[in-house]
Length: 108
Figure 1: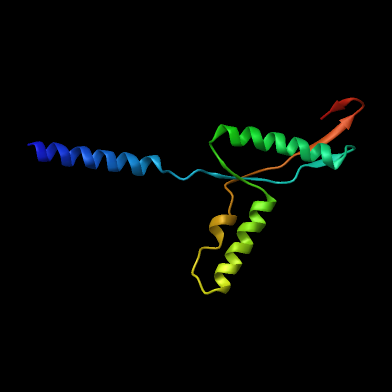
Figure 2: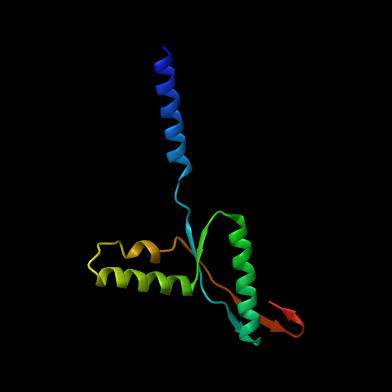
């Protein structure tokens, strides 16, 4: 009877561990565009939004730099003859983009 209880507990713990390792959706941050404002202001707002999203710990956030890095690593691996899924590091489930404009002293 003890053995059956131990096996049941191990099966339950194993199942919960697999469920807890669910895949996080990937969110890609596209560069924000500024109309009537400097590119540094648009970039600053993009980083601010990105940091808020990262703090949620719901999404795995990638940006252009991360996407280029993933592509170059995949190309290098393929060049060495490794078999890999090219779409895995490059595919995003969601894309966030933004436009920043200024009307007088008001940012929109």
